Length: 128
Image 1 (cartoon, helix red, strand yellow):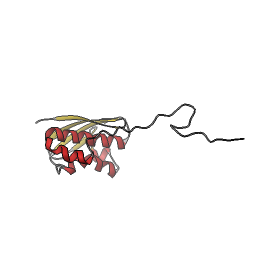
Image 2 (cartoon, one colour):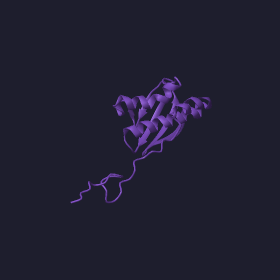
Image 3 (cartoon, rainbow, N blue to C red):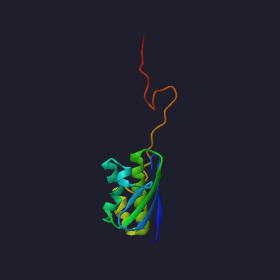
């Protein structure tokens, strides 16, 4: 039983993926992914790479994810799964790369600046 492990990142979220041949069970931090991600949109994001290659019920996936919010975590898991699938079969790289699942989305929240209410927002100007 060969275990393939990879890492996926998005925003502040980091996901460690352990992919093994199996019957399609996906666990995130010890829970089923549908229980962990209650929003259907995030459940869909998690399995996008598997659906693209039609291998949803071919692999068991165990994901440990920390940091960030649910959206960042879901996209980090997607990237980790895509990387694991490419590690197993290099021919899948073209299809996954075309969808953008292998590209690290490096956009993060800009930090708050001192003397301002947010990163770029200013307090309301009053002339008098």
